[in-house]
Length: 392
Ligand SMILES: *Cc1c(COP(=O)(O)O)cnc(C)c1O
Image (tube, rainbow, N blue to C red; front, top):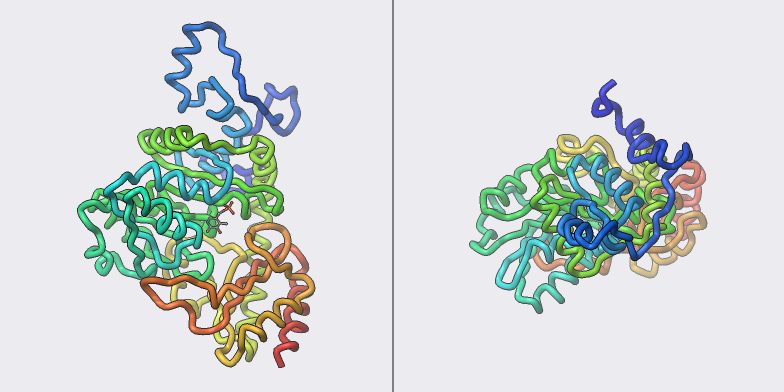
């Protein structure tokens, strides 16, 4: 069987394993290091010219543990090259700064991950890079006038990680290319369920902190591309700014990746079961989850995604106050209160009020974001049921 024909779960268990080089041990070792000894003075000069092609010359260019994880992530997303960096937010910053310079313009969806907006409105603005925010649910036709002659990046995030609007990525990426801009997506929600390069993107960002790590014990990010030229740009920018990922964290992410297909499949189903149960509750106005047929983004999700993760939003009836919602969330016993997602444990987080919007309206009432972990679903539903009783 051609390895390319194997299914996702099979590939995840076999990729980037060391074979005989590791004395038969199943997993690769952790390579830590700064100095990489060179065979001669001339070889050092020659090798250094090829440092972005995995010719190892110094620790900051990465080593075998980084490369193993990069190969796995590139495979997950269908790209050709991946660069791992210390956090998901660093993975957002590196390609933005690699592809934008003073005088350039960037387009970002209004639903974008908050710290990405913070970067655009803070440091990037100070460096003379202007960003406009657009309605994430826009058609390509409606977005076209927002492009300027100096627009170099169209940033995408589908669905948004707080409000879950779906974007028409193929149409928007095609528009970006027609205007000589790079289409860059934060694919942390999509993981392998959304294949960014097959859908027209040039750069894909993931917070490996989330489902790839899978155990809430690391911070890590990846930038994946599908061309040598884009790889050199991203790798060059990461290197110039001194970005690096801990090899120990890369090793943990590799371990997470081995079980990810099974975790995701379970969490997708568990998340949908919890979402449907909540949908039927009188306290709930609507659920923000593109895999539900009632969701306004469902048609795009169905067209472009092969599955869902277990992160979604719960919009409460407008009669509830923030104090009510705090009482509900504080009353949950199995859902922890905390940022991040993608681990084995369930989380609940009041997100609205607090969503920043400059181009579109934030949801009008209280929103709680839920991450469904690996606990028994019936126990999670019982927990939600007892906490909802506190609203009465
Ligand atoms: C968490 C997250 C990030 C940032 O990842 P960190 O590793 O926490 O820095 C980026 N994008 C999205 C959509 C996220 O949810």
